[in-house]
Image (cartoon, rainbow, N blue to C red; front, side, top):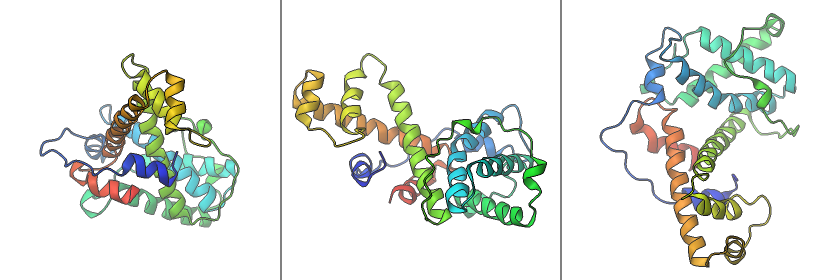
Length: 246
């Protein structure tokens, strides 16, 4: 799903301008919790960490060459430490993106880990989610850790947006459109022809084109919704999208 063709089809349309007025983002709540978790900020903090743990895990696993179990332990330790510091203790949204801040914090953490091998033995508390859901296919690419982090973050955004689209596709008025999108854009092997998709759905080729256009537009909207939850100021959305997808 993350091939260049998919990016071109889904993200190639110029994004619309951000409205002058906007609602507080998930980060707006998190930034108010610099001193630590509160009842108000906890759901937003858990959602943000739940979004970033995949990129952090794969950066540790593949970029730093850790074993599966060591990588899981380090992710647990890193985010526990991150929470104990008040989540956003050193983050200034005027000086850069949160992704960059988080990655710099991870590098610093791993440098410290090299000097303190007892870290894993000590453990570090519990996170509000499980690492057992991580899918690890065992491959060991030689990419630099920063590239692994970036690529996994792009994948995470796309997967989250697609999951939301899939949920919407269960609605009666969205089912046929999502099915066309699933058959064509989410094909795991060779992409079928428009004609074969039309035949599978019992509709004309023109209907397939309309379904794909509507689903791609909705996916772009959902991608924006996912990304805006991870930035401090929604007015930075376009820059973040360009940074992620080029």
